[in-house]
Amino acid sequence: VIADGKSGPLAHLPSGSFQANNAWLTLWAIAFNLLRAAGALAGAFHARATTATLRAHLVNVPARLARSARRLTLHLPDRWPWQQPFTALFDAAHAPPA
Image (cartoon, rainbow, N blue to C red; front, side, top):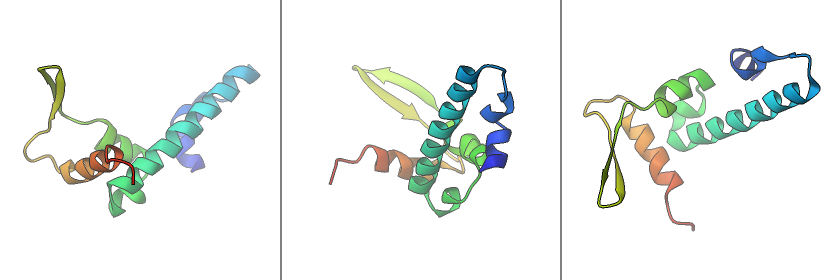
């Protein structure tokens, strides 16, 4: 966990300002927890992946966003290797509450 943080926002610590350090640490904790939850929803491989892998596979999506009749449509590539985990994450996040 600390190694993932040191390669990202925690690399800016210490900045010399307590408030700035507090802000970076808070943002890192929120982003880390959200990525972990997204990885768990995407599947077993992504549940154990590092944050860099999660960003590369699930956050940096090579998609085209289209708008038609006030609806947004996300067009994913045909042979994108992470389409099934991304679809599982999307379906889990947008499912109606139980």
